[in-house]
Length: 153
Image 1: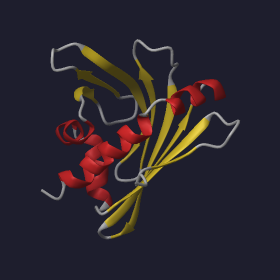
Image 2 (image 1 turned 60 degrees about the horizontal axis):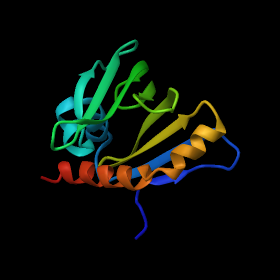
Image 3 (image 1 turned 180 degrees about the vertical axis):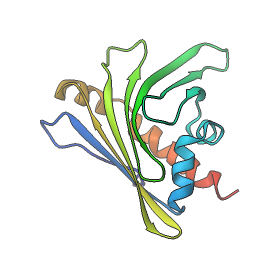
Image 4 (image 1 turned 135 degrees about the horizontal axis):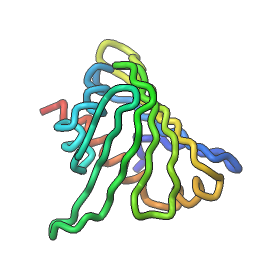
C-alpha cells in the first residue's frame, strides 16, 4: 500500500522533503502541530514544553508502557507565522544524530483541504542517509493518518 505521506530525498543532498495533503482546513492542520493536547493524540508522544513563538522552545518525550523513556526530542522555534510557517531546530536526545533544521510550511489548497511540506536539512549527507534507513517514513505516515482521523471524530 502506498504511503500518503511522501518522502523526497535526492541522492547526494543533505535534505529531505516530507509532503502530505489532508482533508482538513489549514487552520486545523496548523492546530494539530501547535496545540499540545492535539499533538499528543496523533503523534503519540508527550509534550513537555511547547512555546509557539519566535525564540520559544519545545520538548517531546515518549515512554514505554513500563515508563522507560524511549524517545526524547527538543528544539528552538525561530519563526512562527500562524497557519503558514514554523522554522525550528530538532534534536533527538541520546542519539548520534546532530541537530537538524526544519522548515514547516502549511498551505491552504481549498477551504476544506490543506498540505504540509516539511523541509529538513541535516548536518551531512551521511546523517541524512542514516535517517532514511530508519522506519520513520512508515511511522510518520501512521501518525499523519491518526491526525486526519482525530478531526473526523
